[in-house]
Length: 265
Ligand SMILES: NC(=O)c1ccc[n+]([C@@H]2O[C@H](COP(=O)([O-])OP(=O)(O)OC[C@H]3O[C@@H](n4cnc5c(N)ncnc54)[C@H](O)[C@@H]3O)[C@@H](O)[C@H]2O)c1
Image (cartoon, rainbow, N blue to C red; front, side):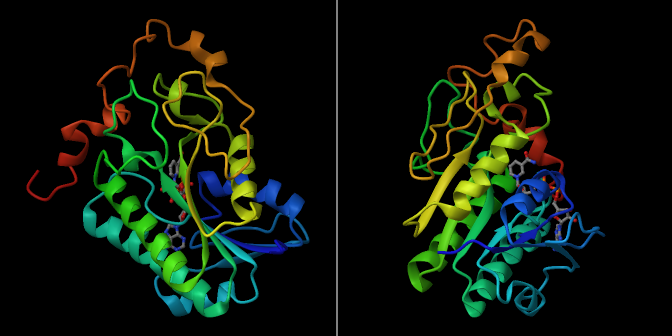
C-alpha cells in the first residue's frame, strides 16, 4: 500500500501538533484538518477547517487519500452524550467516509484509559479485555469496536493506537509508567501507517519506560527510543506509586473523577 497522501484530523490539538512536522517530512501530501484554525507549515501541507459532524463533511476531505490518522475528539472524561458524539459518532463518520472513498488504512486514536482498571502490578498486552477507568475509556472501547467492524466487514485496514500520556516530558508520577514522548508518538504513528499485512490491530503506544505496564506490539515493528526513568528524580518518594492492585488509571479511576460528569452528581 502506498503512503503518500494522509489526512490528519485533530491536527490543531496536542498530539496533532506534535505529528505535523514529522509527517510533512515523510509524505508527499499532508492534509491537516481541525475545526480550529490552522496555518500550513510547508508546501506539502494543505489545511482544512472542518467539523467532522457528518459523513458528508468528511467525505470530501478524505477523497484521494491513502490513509487517515483520526485524532479529533474529546480527549478526556466528559458527560457520556459528549463522548458519544465526539468520539463514537465522529469515528463512525471517518470510517464510513473512508470506506466510501476507498481509503486503504485508518489509524484511530484510542487510549490507555480503555484498560485503566487492570492492576498496575501486571503487565498486560493489547489482547487483555477492556476495563475502562471511566466514561472516556468506554467511548474508546466503542471506537475500537467500530474499527474492528470496518476491518472485518469491509476490509478496511485499521490500526487502533492506545496512546499513553503524550507530553514533552513526564509531569506526574504516573507518567513514569505511561509517558509517550513526541518522537516515539511520531514513530508509532508512522509504523501504524506503513506496517505491512495489517487487517486490524490494537496496540499500546508508549515509550520504552522501565515502569510501563503495557506490552509493546511486535506487529507494528516500532521500538520506542525514550524512557521516562531519566525523569524519576523529579518525583521523589514515588517508587511504589501505582503498584500491586492499584488501577493502572491511577486518579482517573477514582469515583469522583467520573461522578462530576454524571447528571445528578
Ligand atoms: N494527549 C494524550 O496523551 C492522549 C492520550 C490518549 C489518547 N489520546 C487521544 O488522542 C486524540 C488527540 O488528543 P489530544 O490530546 O491531541 O486532544 P486535543 O483536545 O488537544 O486535540 C483534539 C483536536 O481535535 C479537534 N476536534 C475535536 N472535535 C472535532 C470535530 N468534531 N471536528 C474537527 N475537529 C475536532 C479539536 O479542535 C482539537 O484541536 C484524542 O482522540 C484523544 O482521545 C490522547
